[in-house]
Length: 277
Image 1 (cartoon, rainbow, N blue to C red):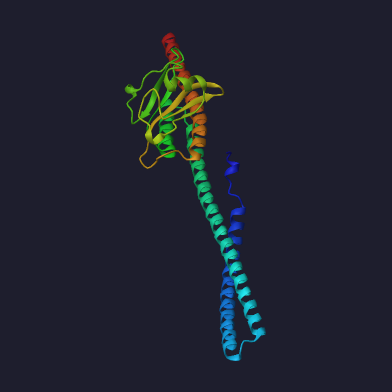
Image 2 (cartoon, rainbow, N blue to C red):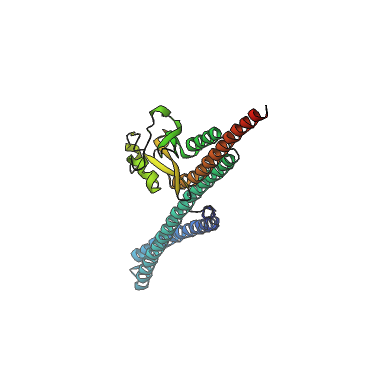
């Protein structure tokens, strides 16, 4: 689902107005039916009284049957209108629920946009990791997780930031080892089928999202536990994961390049200073 798809459908307000108008008309028509029903019932009583006192006129009996038939027709029409009103009420409730969901998705995407802007405005590696940690806590709703980055020399994945899990507890993972290593090799997102029943396993997290630059996996985000108020993942969470992974990967890659270049610059500057003394 793209951001453009998140824009609220204009039909929601139109259908809501249609519902209110139809509801008012239905209420008025129901009142008219009830009044007509009472009038006809009173007329039947009159005719029955006339039949008892007037000796049983055939024309009065026919009119009585016609009135009874008309009452049945009006009762059916009333039930049909009430059924239609209930159907429109259900549709209106669906629209209201969808509206709330769209608002929530838009808010989350707006927050992610602001966070990603901040993410790309800094170059210090540690500061980038702090922003990523805040995004995972506040937008995703994770309580225990880690950010792991691939070491270019050894090829091992090691944790560079964590929450709820000590860094020294996190294993160094080879490509293909456990769920983490598998995701690092395939580049595909992984979500446990039953988050509520998940038992923490450092090599096999509840969620594992690859950090990719194009098709190259430079690390992963692993989640072991959600915040207590978050029981499961909403549809918008999967999109947030994908967007976060892309922004986080770019920010981590850029900050590492910047840190390496700064380190090299400092080394060269020190060497130049040594030569010029």
